[in-house]
Image 1 (tube, rainbow, N blue to C red):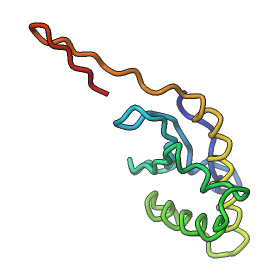
Image 2 (cartoon, helix red, strand yellow; image 1 turned 90 degrees about the horizontal axis):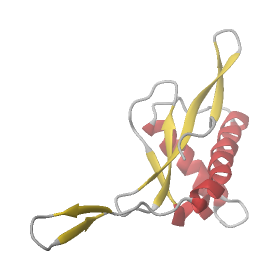
Image 3 (tube, rainbow, N blue to C red; image 1 turned 90 degrees about the vertical axis):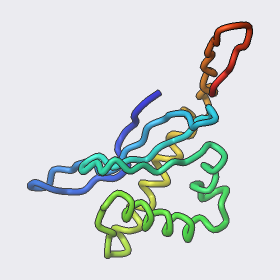
Image 4 (cartoon, one colour; image 1 turned 180 degrees about the horizontal axis):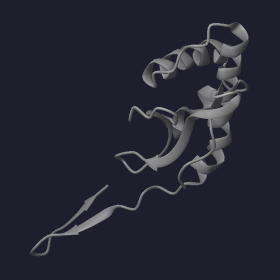
Length: 132
């Protein structure tokens, strides 16, 4: 698993569309699969983690407060990634749609990820320690 496609595009440089947010898959400190959103154009090294047990919140079919939840999440992501918040309703709605889409498109890969293999450290003597 690794990186996936862009989350949102923005026109720059004479109308050329550039991706500004992407996703990748990793494991958290407990070895559970997570989806990570990150900026692409200006990577400020900040990441937004979506644990497997919360991906349902990004689905219109499963979350009754989908629109307000996602609108708040868009604001958080824009602030976190230093992205200008779209001023127009149409552009903001498009961004909401793209965020939901990239997360929903990543669910299959996230669900299919096996938990991380525990790291086995052998200590002198007969004691074994397993670190996740």
